[in-house]
Image (cartoon, rainbow, N blue to C red; front, side, top):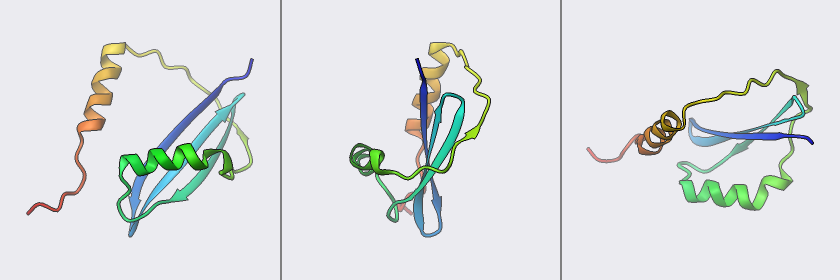
Length: 93
């Protein structure tokens, strides 16, 4: 049975938001880069993943070591809450 691990990182690279999709399958890593609009909202990113994930062009796969992290569920929940509540650059003066 093969395992697939996926990860999406979104960051701001002047003047657009950029998403990097990472995919690890059977110990091989491949990536794809996507450029979003000026400030992509969570719903826009989610919609993009649902519509276009299967049509992404990933890089050639390279061997990688996959470490399985076992974290305390409460600690993982705290980290998720912290990431979700983090505010970006606001327009309020």
